[in-house]
Figure 1: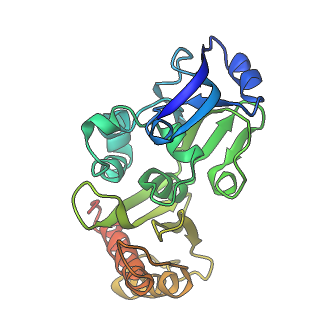
Figure 2: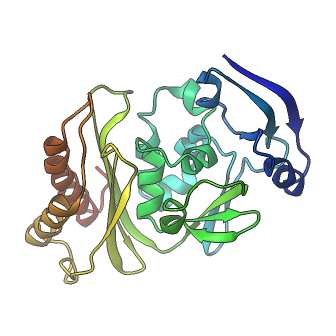
Length: 265
């Protein structure tokens, strides 16, 4: 059972940041994983009063507040239209609607979870995170940093995505994923991610120009083979390393062909 000695419902980001500098305190987002722990913490910091639960669309980007739930992402018509349904596809399998009504994008990305569908998606799309102290940081850099005491305010998705597709394998409809994949064309360059390896998602860019002339069956197969041979996978009770490695190539090619066909899946 989770126990905490103090509860802070902050009124400003500055207040949240100052409280979070104390190691005994923890930011409470959806509180889904924290509450499963058997521990006592000094205090929880509640961000729900800061207005970070909105998806804002500007001319150049989508700004997704850290307290936006996965259900909000699933139901966002603006994101669905812009990403051709990829955002909805990435979250619709996650446990159940009740869970997605609580789980937040901020908690999902801050946790850098290996099983995170959300991380797989936004890493491939070239997203950034906005931190209170550090400012805007590329998500690709953020995931490699050790968790610190900064406060994640928002996820920024620049409008540079020209096509994308999200794919995953699950043993059952709402189970944790066996493997996740997202391919995208961002600012003219193809890149993709493989997650649930079972480690956290990793990014692959088309640095060798395998897709420079566009997506064909041959070029998609070549890039898929590149991903398959370079991705590092492991084994757990959901799947073995070799199976994951083979499926990384399969999902990559499937995602690329979906982009070429103008659809999602």
